[in-house]
Length: 510
Image (cartoon, rainbow, N blue to C red; front, side):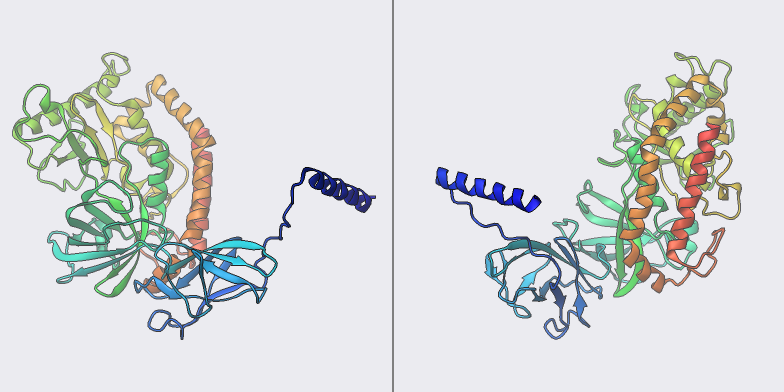
C-alpha cells in the first residue's frame, strides 16, 4: 500500500508539472563522506609536513593538524573521492590531487561534483601545531627577572580561527607574577612599542601571558573570567589560549589576557592627572589593590588593618593619595558603623553594591585563595562615582587548587569571612540581593560553567598533550596542588567534581 501510494503521488506530481509546463530537474543525493579522503603527503609538501597527515571529516568540516610549530599556510592537498569521475574545485578552479596548492591562512571551501551532478561543499581548515594561535617571541637576551624589560619582537600566527591584521610587532618583555614566577614555566608581561589590538580586543600596549603552571587543568583563570563576564563583573579581562615559542623553543600553553590597568576597554574610567586636584577632578579615577605584600610605591592601611596599594595613577600627588586613602577609610568606618544599613547614609552611599556582589559571587564560588583579603583584590573609583570592585583576577589557586588552607575544601565560607563582606551580610537587604543573584546564576551561569569545562577540555586536548610533554608534571606534586592525579582528564574531572560539591554547599548556606 505504501509503494502504491508513493507511485500515485509521483504520477500526480508529474502530471501537474507537465500541465503547468514546468520541468523539475533531478535532484542528486548529497555525497556522503564514505570513500572520501583528504590528506597532506610529506613528499608533496617538502619542508612543511614531516610525515603524512590524514585529515578528519565531520559532516562538511574537514580538519588537519600539521605537527610542527612552523608558520606555514600554503599546502598541496591530496584527495580521493568515492566517484572517480568527480570534479573537485576551489573558487571554480579545478583541483588536481597532490598537485594544486592553496593558501590555508583561512578555511578553504572544496566543492565536489560527482558524475551524476550531485554536489557538496566541504570546508577545509589546516592548523599549525595544536590549532591554537602561536606567539613567536624573539628577545635580545634571556628574560630572567620581573624588573627589567628585554627588547624583542612577537610574530603572531592566528592559526585560522582568529583575525590579526598586524602580525609582527616590536615589544619589550619581562617576567611577572609572584609565586607563579618561581615555577619553571614562567609568566610574562609584554609591552608593545605602540598600541595595537590582538585578536579583536581593544588596542593597548600592555598584555600578559599567564603560564597556569600549577593549575594542571590550564583553565581556572579562563573559567573565572568567563563567569565574571556573564555576571557583568566590572572590567573583567578576556582569556585566549595560545602557544608560546620563545627564541625557537616551545614554552607551552599560555593564556593571553589584558593587563589590569586604567585604559579604554580595560578599567575604563577617567584617567587622573597630577593637576587634577579640584573638588570634582580629585574624585577619580583610581585603581587600588588590596595586597598584603604592599607591592607598590604608594600604599596605606585602614583602621581595620587592610593594606591597599594605589596602582594608578602611578605619579599620584600627595593630595590625591590623601583623598583616596580618606575615601577608603570613610567607607570602612560606615560599613563597620552602627547605621551601616541605612539606604541613604550607610554603605550604599559609598560602594557600588551590584559591583561588590558580582565580584563576591565569582570569588566565593571559586573559593579563591587570594580573595580572602590577601592580594589581587582590585577596587576602582571613577570620577564622581562610588567605590567598585573589579576586575576579577588571579584564579589559578582557586577551585580547590591549594593545599595549605581551608580553601581546598568545597565546603565553608571564604570571601564572606572578610572584614567588609562579613559586615555587609549582616544587612538583610544585602543578603537577600546576593541570594536573588545566586538563584539566577544557578539556573543559567552554573550550567554554562559545567558545559564550558567540557568544551574547554576538548578544545585544549591537543594543546594539553603538548604542554605536558614539555612540562611532564601530571605525575608530580607542584606547589600547592592538594592531589596528584596523573592525567589531564582526571585533573578536569576533579575540577568538575569540586564545583558540583561547592555549588551544593553554597546553595544550602546562602
